[in-house]
Structures are given as C-alpha cells and as structure tokens.
Amino acid sequence: MKNSLKLALIFVLSVMLAGCKKEENTPSYHKGDLTIFTDESFQSVTEALADGYMMNYPDTKIKVETQKEDLGFLDLLHGKTKAVVMSRNLSPEEIKTYEERTDLKFLPAKFAADAVVFVVPKDSPKESISMDEISNGLMSDKKEFIFDGTNSSNLNFVAEKLKKQPKDLQFSIIPGNQKIIEELGKYPNKIGVIGLNTFSRPYDKTSEKLREMVKVLPVENKGKLYTADFNGLRTMEYPFTRVLYFLINEGNFNIANGFIRFSCTHLGQKIVQKEGLQPYNLYKREVQMR
Image 1 (cartoon, rainbow, N blue to C red):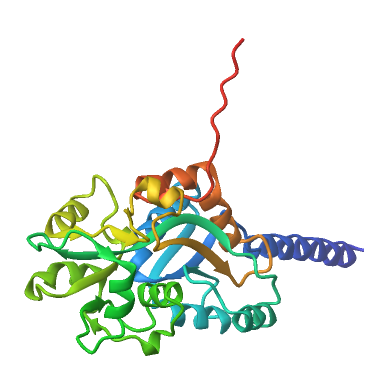
Image 2 (tube, rainbow, N blue to C red):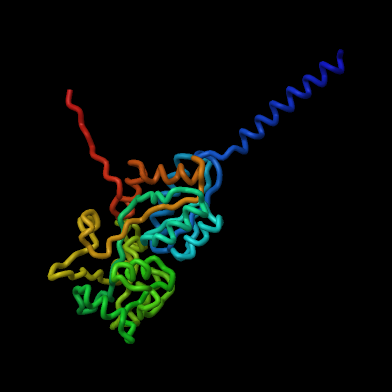
C-alpha cells in the first residue's frame, strides 16, 4: 500500500514538473529572443522599435543585425531569421517562393514611409536634380552616382523606380550610407545616394553632424520640385518615397509577431515619427466633450 502511494505521488509530481517545464519553454510574444535582419539604410528605426519593445517587455531580447536587403530576404527563406525589414516590392515569383517556404500568406506589415535621397557636398552649386538626370546618369560610364553597394535597398529601389535591373545601372560604390556622406567631399562631381533614415533623427547629434556635411537635392519631376520632408513622404509625392515593411517566418503569435504588432500600434508609430520618418498607420485623435 505504501509503495503504491509513493508511486502515485511520484507520478503526480512528474506530471506537474513536466507541465511546468513545458510552460517555461512555450514560446511567447513577451519573452524570448529574436534576431531581425535589416538593411543598413533603415537600421536606426529598426533599432529604435526594438528598444521600445524590450522596454515594454523586459523578458525579451531583440538583436538587430545589418544585412543587404536581398541577402536578408534569402536568409528569411532559409530559416536563418524570423523577421526582416524590406522596402522593395517582391516579384510574383518571389512571393510564391516566400509562401511555399514559410507556409504563410504574403502579408507585408507596413510601418513607415522612408525615402532614398540624393546628396552633394554642402558647397556644391547644384540645387536640384531631375528624374531625367538620374535616369540618364545611371546609364552613363561616368558613374556619377555613389551607392552603398550591390544588393542594397537603395540600389534596388532606385532601379525599381526607373523600371530597370540593378545590374544594368552604372554607379560607384562607397560601403555604408554614413561613409558616403563623410567621403563625398573628396568627389565634388559625384552625387551620393543614401537612405533618409541615415540622418533623419531630428535631435540626434550624429544625424545633425551628417546633415551639416551635405545638401539634400529636391527632385524635379514634370516641372515641379519635390522634397523628402514629412509632407512629401505623407503624400508620397516625393518620387523616391518608399514604404518599409516587415516580413516574418513565424506561424504562431510569438515574439516576431508581437514585435510587428507593437511597431504598428500607436506607440510604435510614435517611435517611427521620432526617427524623422512618416508613420504608415495614422491615428486620429478624438476628444469627447462632456
């Protein structure tokens, strides 16, 4: 009898311990680790959102790693990461591959309007640039435009906008958006092509220093000038406005889905705004009078 009672107690304790262990190991949106791959051009806003999420959920740890946009997308398909930030539109073939590899519907989580901007040294006499200049210049052997590398979001987006393949464009390379700004003065006849988020933070000292080094050129299109300010991004009239979105490889509502939901809520969108970008989800403020 005593042995039977002992065995029963051991069985009950085993079940309870197994249940506790299972509960501890169950993935959750409010605890666990996540690595997000993002192109360097929008690293800042991704890190700001990650910091905001970890402040709200202290048991989470989000690591942001920089990876060229095309390579990050491939890593997502191969299961090397649960989340990536994208800016270019995927082709029908890429969408099909994504859905087959992840067993998920293609549902891009749009969270911010960013832009590709064209910059020249501060003392340059150039005051604007036209769409024709950009299109013709990128087909010229002079290689007047400087990008941050191949497979990058900036090159991909400009090529997409001009309805060309990146491999068909002629350009120079200086690795890194910030490096382009810092070294552009050595090449007075060149035009840097960078992501706005590189120096969009209004009160950040590094951003202020970088903004002082270059002049951002308005883009002329059909006789009208457009700038990459809040109005130009909100209306998407600035020709090189791009929408940033998350793609994930996670079926359940765990940390990747939780992070994306947070980024698209009012708090996440306020973080986007503080980064100097245009929030994608605009929230109306309603005041009830009594």
